[in-house]
Image 1 (cartoon, rainbow, N blue to C red):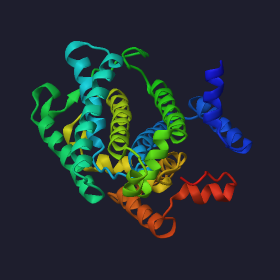
Image 2 (spheres, rainbow, N blue to C red; image 1 turned 30 degrees about the vertical axis):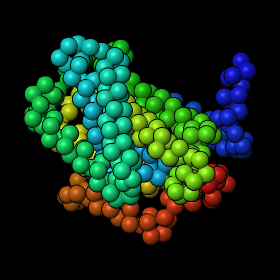
Image 3 (cartoon, one colour; image 1 turned 120 degrees about the vertical axis):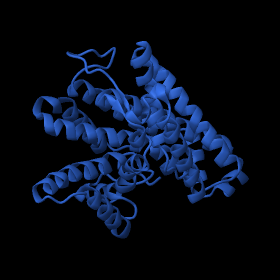
Length: 336
């Protein structure tokens, strides 16, 4: 009981009651949302939570530790392909395959991190390294028969609801991605209250100064990328069993990596609520613009919107939407 009480105090911290009540209300709304929404809007909300989750995973590496990765599709693709492949070929359930997928993604993150951080690659050079690994993996899976090659890997769509084998409808996958999103939020909150979180923030501000005062820079960066990769792999497993198909051209695509980065960038890098707010803005308005594009027969309007949104945010809200919104609502998150 004492341990749980201490954990609760760390989680709540100095958050004012207004913030806690707002979070409780938001969670309550999300819990009952499937009962009030139709299939279309439920699918939109699922996308919001998915991008909020992967954005939070990416935010650990970039927003907290300050290491730019543009190849996070590598980890989502590995997690999804390995779990789906084990299920497809050997009948190994996704909950068991999940461990293999997460372990593979974490190992890949460790390799990328060691090569990058050990040789002091930073900024755009480290980003290019992450892109290269994602592209190499895409080419490998494109010619790997076990993974279906370029023709893709397809999972049989089951009838009814089977949580053990992740066979079911949108509602089941909605609650799964909601649990992942809430879990990632809580984990990031606890990490920021911990010593490793303080190390990350020090490295983000000035790695050389942090090392000079005794921060284990290499170890802290490695923890950040391995943890970020493992969490992203979880999303990859969810994505594979939700959509029931995987193609190397999309699973490891540069565009998939960019999608992962957009929510925290738009919402606010280094903030806890930024990925969720960014996901709401991008997914909600992106879907609306998709519908408008279908009516107006304008192809690519969703991508145009993404580009314009990024341009507007960079120009007028460089810190992201959430810090500005929180200030207006009196829910300002402590600056990280």
